Length: 304
Ligand SMILES: [Fe+2]
Image (cartoon, rainbow, N blue to C red):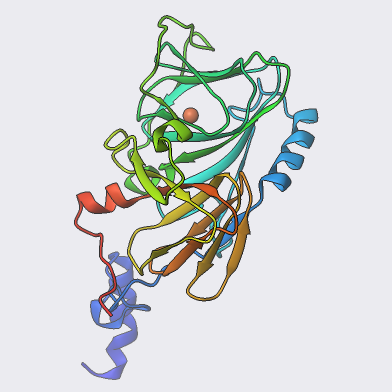
């Protein structure tokens, strides 16, 4: 092929929506993961102050949810916290109800501050929410939030929305009743109090909770006594952590060394070896996309 026909040739390929595999602007494959997402930290104190301000001019009736999304600070990203998971701080003021809806995205929340009288209605069942509780709303379960206490409630939502959006399998539906009425009582399998799940004792311990309840998201509670350390190798799994009690330090690739307090969130993208340490006794909440990656055989750890 001589030089003269190349330009029109490539022009014609583009018109036909072809791209020559031999001249890609960037490779499609590479030797090892190259995460585009970055480690990043969000502080509960900052979120709480900003949500309190929003509470003055954002009525819950207007917002589907009054929340602050933790947007990973990488170019072009406007939503996701990590590759497959988004996290957000949410606030429901005393006396408010956040209307019921359902979506194919799976969700859960970690309660940071809530007084008795705060609850989520999941498929007609009242699920009470107290600090340290994990409340699940699996895919397509109706859920609405209510706060009948005399204080504002705050929690952290985690959803697999980035993955569901990527898969183009998103469905969303508002509940026709507005706020779904309570039709069932009794204990709910969707409420997991962290301390009870960890059990008695003061030893270092890791407990998986809600195993299999959310097909894309893995949840662990980590009891980290003062002076202990937990190492996580380079792995394709994306990790997010928050702190339920005490403080914990997250050190990434021997670099960033962040001290997390209750309600703070850190995202550690795949392929970043990291460690958790505690200067004081801590309970740490871990959220990962491991179940999703495991289903497609993509959980890989660095061998070197
Ligand atoms: Fe929702």
